[in-house]
Length: 523
Image (cartoon, rainbow, N blue to C red; front, top):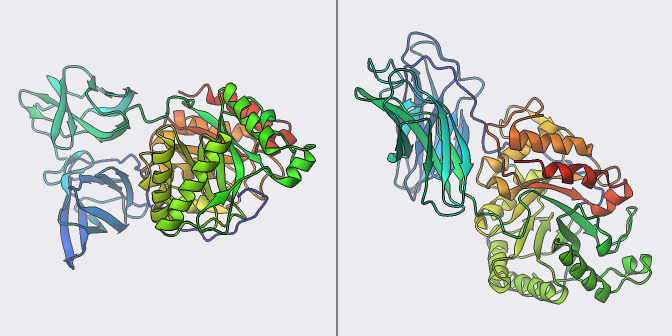
């Protein structure tokens, strides 16, 4: 994984884009048509028309799809998805529309349904955003999530113009709350559930168009015995130029320690672990029993220790049901023998998401609900939901703890805005690429940023720890960003990972001593 390695990759398109603010002339309409249907799938096309008398500089079309209907590839727009709610925004070349002008975008779909609850720039697609009926309130602005609990989501917004009797909060076509003021709490929700809402103002003459929608997830997703924001570090079970350490010598700033690595055996899917003989010798005779005692020591300090599988040279392969069972059984046996709290998937030579998901679910059935499951994909592995790593993360989202992508050894990559290739080693690179995961299916508490601990730890992408802090601020608060600004803030962003504890110690502990206290300041 993280032994110094320069990885040259071909930049590929990310699957989603940021939804930029749009300048509306109030008169846009959007019409949908299935232009082709071949039984197993179909091609859909939206036409956005500016029916006003003044130009517009951007458009946004959002809709829901019924159960059993899904989207595939798309073109001429940027996509953000939250559950079954999909939002398409203009590209840089088709957002400006003169009066009477139109733009089109398309996508492939499967299933029997078609778009429902269509809105264009916040107004009904069919009626457009034309001048409201005289006396009807304006559209509420600034709709935002102001708080969540395990069973509720609280929203706030700016007062609408005109005479307002009250506000209705919509989830799809259903009214979830009716209030007189500019905030509402929707209660009775399941823990760790995602919802999308829009707000409309009303009075005795009618109701305004609905606001831009916002999404939120109720609390209760995180495991109770892990910090809200955590620092993860990898510990070397091998000798290299970094500092060799007994596990008990890991600095206290680390909340989660990933032991690198378990190795493949001759049995397909099975792994083994033991203290590396070279490391044992370097530490004056570090035994398996001493290592087990050190795990107990870290537990006594309130830390968690997990077993990382793979690495840059790892060759563990789980490609069928038999190897999936072998993986789960062997990892569980090692966990029971040593006291590990979970497993980290760091297979840099490819994985099968179907059978690895099967293996991890089997492991969880053996280890229980407190099992920690983390993943450490390379940057390119998380560029698209079609990639095997991203597919695995989404397939086990209900039991996944966190993905800490390696934002290094990558060269330049596209971010979620698809506007440019960002250079590694910058705040923009970290935030724009983390945005891909945050906007395409993973909860913020399942996303952490992974960076090298300092010189020697990676072949490229090494940053000062203060840059990591700035990236976390940008994602959690919307402050200290570079030129890239995420489409929203993610106060639940899980934290940071570093390769590695050993390299951090070799470089004076600057990473942990800078990033760990900063994590405590996040919302």
